[in-house]
Length: 183
Figure 1 (cartoon, one colour):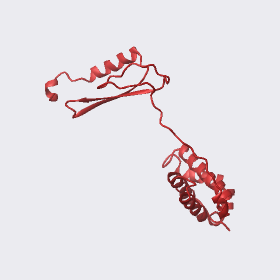
Figure 2: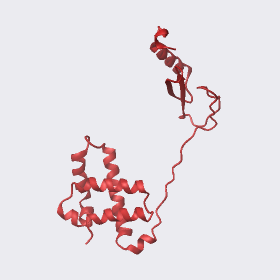
Figure 3: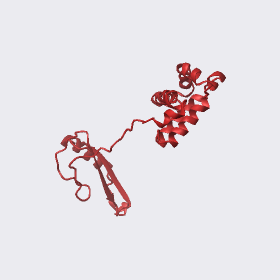
Figure 4: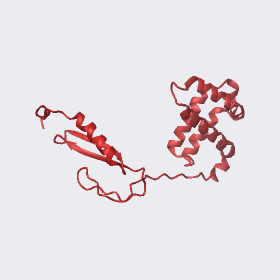
């Protein structure tokens, strides 16, 4: 009979065999640990019983941790991780020969960049057309001989009215007595 500890051993084996990335394995094991706290003896001793009662167990986890320790979204993510490992375990974990033929789907994420955006000097941005209107420009300006720094992030397509608002806010913050700032 397969018990709950077999699921954890399966995750470790899947990480060792490069079926799960290390971070994925860690996330799955954390989800399993969270659910394990709510299991009764029958569920600990039977993966089938655990899977059968997953909804009730999830409700217990939510009532214990929801809103305090974890967001609802985090708990839903943990539940999906548990369901994923249960599915993978039933497919590849029970029969060791099946793990050798397991080819997991590889998800590749790439960093988004601002096309054609070129920084020229301190804080100025060369004007280029940009395909992504949601792009953000980050400007870092050293102040007071590099002892302080001004950082601002604005949309690439900032309007003149928005610039005027930012200017007014910055002017309201400025000190009238610059001698005391040791410039």
